[in-house]
Every structure is written in C-alpha cells, then in structure tokens.
Length: 322
Ligand code: BTN
Image (tube, rainbow, N blue to C red):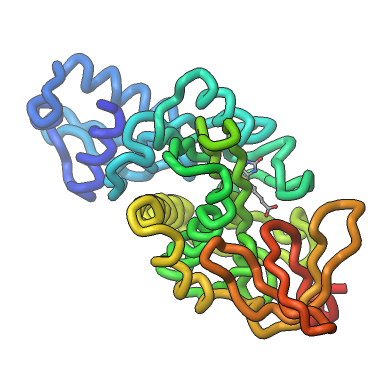
C-alpha cells in the first residue's frame, strides 16, 4: 500500500521534485523507509531521479500491470482496493483467482498477468495470451442464485464495452453472450467461473481478456487489437464493472437490459447457435434479450426459443471470416 501511495503522490505531482521529507510526512513513514521503497520501485523498472537538494522525481513508469500502478488513483470502492496480484507468466489468472477465492480471498481481489500459458476461453477453448495484452480475473462474492450468472456476465460485457469505447474512442458491440467486437472482430472475451451450491454462490471469478498492443498474428483469425494505454483501459474497465455490478445487485438485470440490447450486434440478425459441443446447432433470427439475459430467437417454423448459453455465429460474420 505504501508503495502504491508513493506512486500516487508522484503521479499527482507530475514532473515535480518531491523531497524525502514531504513524502515521509504525507505518507506517515520514516525517511529511511521512503528510501527503501524508492529502491524497490527502481528495481521494478520505475525511473526515479534523485537530486540531493531537490528530492525525487518520477521520470517514467514501467509498462506493467503492477498493483501499485493500477491501484494508484483507481476510482473504485472495492475492486482492487484490498489486494492486487501480478504475475509475469501464469497458466491462467482465472485458476489463480479461483485458488485464492477458495482460500478466503476477499471480494474485489484482482489477479493480473503479462502473459498466460493456458489462458481459458468459453466452452473449453484456449485464449491466446501473448505478452503485453490484458489478462485479469476478479473475485466477486455476489449474494444471488447461480441462475443469475448469465445475466450478470452480460451486464459485465456492457461495462467492458463502454470502458473500451470511453478510453479508445472505438464503437464496440456485444455478440451475445459476452464477446466484445470492434468492426466484427473480437477484441475482448469474458469467462465467468463459479463455486456454488444449488441455491447460493460461494464466489465468482470474472476473467477478462482484452487484446491490446499485441501482435495480431499471435491471435486467432477474426481478432482485433487495440493500441492504447493498458493502465487507462484497465482502470476504466474496473470502474465500469464495479458500477454495473452494484446496479445489478440493487436493481437487477432489467435496469441494464436496454443498454445491453442497444450494444448488441446480434439482435435482428440471422444466427446459428452452438449450444454445446456435440449437440446440433439452433438456427433462427435473434429477436430479443429477455429479462434473464437469455437470447430470444425465432426459428424458421415460427417457434420462440430462449437460449441461456452457447456460441452465436452470425451469418454475415461467417461469410466475412471463413
Ligand atoms: C472467451 O471469450 O472465450 C472468454 C475469454 C476469457 C479470457 C480471460 S483472460 C483472463 C482470464 N484468465 C483466463 O484463463 N481466461 C480469462
């Protein structure tokens, strides 16, 4: 926390020298420990100049999703406020977050990685996670029944899409249930995993992958990559997720449904849905997202079906990307 507060103080006083005395007084720590933390930050790649009479000045911060960088000036109440873990290389941030949650990890804990060796996607797929993208998992402990998870994940997709657009000036859309697309190409995906009893969730892991600043050749076909400041995107995503999470808990999915439909690139389109591996796909026209977050389709014979999980293939998307 002190490290984070030092980073925060430097960022608030950009390009200015801060004396050891000021830092120690502002943060309530000894000057010796200020020096100890400065040395630690330098080891982590922060460029901090030191001049005997003027004090310290932050020249640059490393391009890493460190807790002390993401957490500095983070505008949330709970998410990222107690614990942020960072790994250079991990199998999957979702696995790590699950392990932490299982041992009692608090709500709002975040796990970041610079790269993942076994990034997990929906429906057992692999999530390509080359160095430098955004890979993060958040522990939540919502007091809702497991049946609400589909709607909650959809609500989170709305917040991720909004955060990306606000930071990058893009115009993203959501391919139900939770793929974020830019001009028809996937830029982000969300994987929700839970530990639950039939009527109660013990914890939920929200895993989010965003393709940022990575080589497009390292990603599957039909992916999009953003070129942007990762920290700005992450801080905006965390803020929007927290907002939508509490809105969902207080007012339910109905209060987010219209926004979700407005961002959907599926409604009104001819779709094919792979419900799960080995089962035949369902075809029809997507006509709505219901109050539970299910996709409503009208099949060729006029029947209305509510789909709770699966993978949507848009006919136009299929043509463009095959
Ligand atoms: C999908 O669209 O299939 C979901 C992709 C989710 C990927 C993220 S990256 C961070 C977190 N850790 C994982 O192993 N998966 C999620």
